[in-house]
Amino acid sequence: MSRRYFGTDGVRGEVGGEVVNPQFALRLGYAAGRVLAKQSGSKSRPSVLIGKDTRISGYMLESALEAGFAAAGVNVMLAGPIPTPAVAYLTRTWRLSAGIVISASHNPYHDNGIKFFSPQGTKLPDAVELDIEAALDEPMGCVSSDSLGRARRIEDAAGRYIEFCKSTFASDLDLSGLSLVVDAAHGAAYHIAPHVFRELGAKVHAIGIEPDGFNINEGVGALHPENLVKEVQARGADFGIALDGDADRIQMVDASGRLYNGDELLYAVVRERAMRAPVAGVVGTLMSNLGLEQAFAALGIAFERAAVGDRYVLEKLKANDWLFGGESSGHLLCLDCHSTGDGIVAGLQVLAAIRRYQTTLSDWVKDLTLYPQVMINVPIKPGMDWQQHAGLQAQTAAVQTALADKGRVLIRASGTEPKLRLMVEAPDATTAQQHAQSLADSLA
Image (cartoon, rainbow, N blue to C red; front, side, top):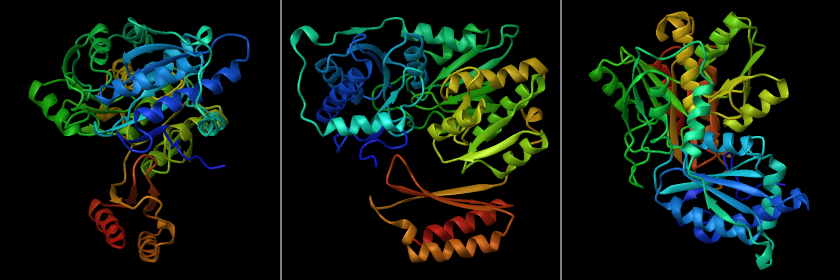
């Protein structure tokens, strides 16, 4: 059975569209509430936590979801602006029935989305999402007045999460003497990320901490790290840390202005763990650099690829009983610390490696040599059968022949927006760019 509303990361789209509107959010809250009520049976009344990022549409969607859950007899805890991984953590810690995040992650403010976490702090299983979609087809009702859900604001959610993040940093280390620039992308971590690093001893200059409902991810954060590079160099900082709008993604910059992507940061974390205990394996994605796979092989660590999306990385980690995985975009999973990807926690693990071994980040990852990758995003019409596009098929075959075993071609549809992502990996950037452009031109 195919899913109609849920993509790789919940429901997402433009505000006012088919699924991101108050009417649908109301129905979704009610449908999800009915499913949760059936799962709990007569044991207890289900309770859920709702968090959001800083988009102006979050107020509207939060109210609609709250009403839908209450109508289904589900209690609602409202955390306000808080990172996606914070919702996962608090849902698990408080033994709730589910956690809900209102966010479109790295997308601009005019998009938004709704995603769910299980009681274990992981993405909802496909089967539960399908149950919710089936419930959306049923007429919306309302439980009796004495069975309505209650709603309350949680005032200390941010503080609890700050303490959790700090607890993942090695207790025998601190960040004293380090100067950091922390970019919160005017997003959900604007009032959290600077405190975490500052309370561990670092001198912190925070940017991207003035959300106005419209500026999330705009020229700042992990999507625009060039801003962070400038700030680090201008202030003579040791490191820069950039998060995205919901703080589950990270990029880092060192004192020289060099930018480190998710593949490099994943290698930095895993190498540190491997210095202390054997690491059985690591999961990347189809987008992970070939150089990362080779570097892990040199360390004697197995490497497997999952479909693009942190939920698929997590699924393969669970299947293999492994702890570490991630995406080049900066979603990093350290299951010895958290149940989901977390930009702040990942940054702390990288800094712990640097502090423990008194080294630089560039030296720490010097054995990792990345192949140049070029990705071009081409807008497509919704529902387009791009796999049967004759021109794209022919050009793909030509590029693969030209690269032979010295590069890769990956073509996939975005799971969050109507775009086709064309990626070419080659021995040099010029070759990668030329081949990627030839693929894009074939779709014109």
